Amino acid sequence: MCSKKLAVYVPSNIPLWTQIQKGHLTLQSQVSDSPYASFPPTPDDRYLEYEIWVCNQESKSLPEFHLACAKHLLGKPNGYPDPILIEKPIWTTWAKYGKGINQDQVLDFSNKIISHGFEISQLELDDMWTTKYGDYEIDCHKFPDFSNMIEQLRNKGIPLTAWVHPFINLESKNASNKNLHKYFVQTASGEPGIINWWNGQGYIIDITNPDAVHWLREQLDGIKKHGVYSFKFDAARVGSKTQELPILIRTIDRASKWVEIGLQTLIPSSLNLSLHGYFWNLPDIIGGNGYGQFEAGEINTLPEDKELYIRWVQANTFLLTMQFSFCPWEFDDDTVKICQDLLKLRSKWVNYIKNECEKAVHSGIPVIRYSIIHKYSISFRPLWWHLETLEAYKCFDQFFVGDKLLIAPVVYQGVKTRDVFLPEGRWRDHKGTIVIGPHKITVETPLEVLPFYEKLSKED
Image 1: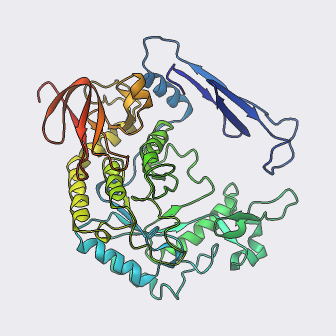
Image 2: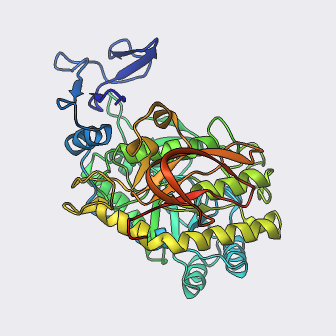
Image 3: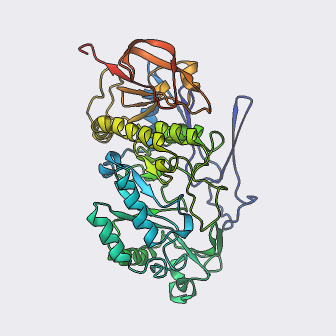
């Protein structure tokens, strides 16, 4: 979709290649000569199929055009995730502990989170807690009493979730069980296909096979008997076409950097997912994954950049959910206080955020004043949703929560001021100052400050 109210839609089963160059969009479909292995093409294969959507009413705004396209092409959610995931942060063992995580570290991690005054919606046990990738067995050397560990967490009000994936590594017991091979993705010759993934070689569970799904459910039910609350499903495009489901879709891993796939991509990726119908997107770990800063099996105790960490927390404060792994107390007391203050700020607005989620689900509920009235709305919006100017189209570091909150975090290193674009209306900043829009202002942004603006009604 572009600002001229034109959209191009290509079905997901088309082997599509794209190029954008000199103002032109080129589409190409490759089947027989594709560099990616696939089944031989048949005469019935569709080589290229696309739809062009054009706004037929000049008076319609870009947001209205987007909503019309999304309604027909993407669907809308039938609910939103467990409210506790909005109310309290998620904490994950990745990236702080990596693959070396064990039972003592899980319990120590939870104790330190609580002792430093932070809340936990759920604690996610990530890679690696099983004996082998593909065997749904608890590693008893690392977790000698898995059920008791979960019980201790539950007594503190902490549900445990577990990381799972669709891969059955060749060295696993399940891979050597030929009776299970029918549950794995097959090659053209009818044998289970071997693939490479980031943790080795193996087979892939064929989720298109109902019997394979039943088998996988049995494995997960066996894990749940220990007290595991829910699962994080990773890899293999597991979140594709799930716009209607009330589940969190995690954005791809972020690097612990300012640029490239670091902090400056946090807001654009969240907004991009929202605009594609994935309203309930989970921003990746605050501070990034720390790749390259530690070896596998080691504890990554201290991210390198305090400023980056604090700015990351600020940028994430008003997004749908917050997810920690690296800990504020690993820096200093000042970082702890800033993070606690940001979570207190979020708690003041959490009911508003949940109400906006309700509006995004239910039809016929008008959005707050000065917004587009439409039965299909999204809660997290880019600046151009309210301000259709060239600067708004290019702005990637401001976003709206509903119609009432404008968030303008700092995503550049060493920056002590930033420009903020305010749409029409009366806006109150974090200090209580009222600013009249539309207006571009420059504000001071010391490290402890997150600029945000509340839109006031005529009565305020």
